[in-house]
Each structure stands twice: as structure tokens, then as C-alpha cells.
Image: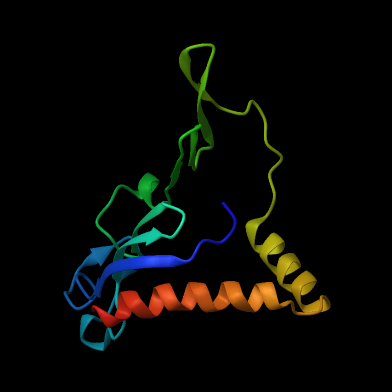
Length: 145
């Protein structure tokens, strides 16, 4: 799929819960001092025909087990993360495959390791181009807010 260019972006960001007093997955907070968006939603279509649906909130009213969900769908299969399930078609039937064992890795340690590796590399034009594409999408979402 590479890194397709966005063709159309429809988005919305807002403060839906943070400015109201209450208790959420973050615990209790000072609603009067709340100054950031708590929800972002977007649909992005790309020049290769792919679509991205984004629904992100760090304090949504959802089941605690549903706080992180990523789903990928394609013409030849798909995947769900948290837990990992591979959805595929084989031998004329649909299959959901779950790994029997995955090595556990500290996600924070991996994130730091990835950052350090990136710092040691020479920047490439490709990385800069991808950053511009990503920020173009983010800017277009906020332009509609």
C-alpha cells in the first residue's frame, strides 16, 4: 500500500466530555481547567482508493476493555488488534486466525528503542515526505473543526 496521498478529508474535533464534571477512564478531573480536545473523528480517502476511518478519544464513555482498537480491512483479508486476529479467506471459507503465542515486549521500551534508532540514521527525503502527508491530513481535520 506504501504511503498514499490523501484526496479527501472529512473531520471533526471537539470537547465533549472534558468540560463536563464527572468521572471517566481518567478518573476525576477539573472540568473548568480542561483546555484540549477530547475527541477526533475523520474519514480520509486516498489516491489509491483506500479509506481510513478514525475515531479517537482519550476519555470516551466506553468499556475499559475497548479503549484500544485497531481494525484493518482489505480485499484479501483483514486484522483486528488487541487481541490480534487475522481474518482471511482460504479454501473457499472464511477463517479467523489467532496466534497461539506472541512474545511479550514492553511497548514503551520498544518506542524508546525505535526513537533512538531513528536518531542514529540519516534523515531521508521519504521520511520528510511522509511527515508532510501525515500533517496535511491532520491540518485538514482541524480546518473543519
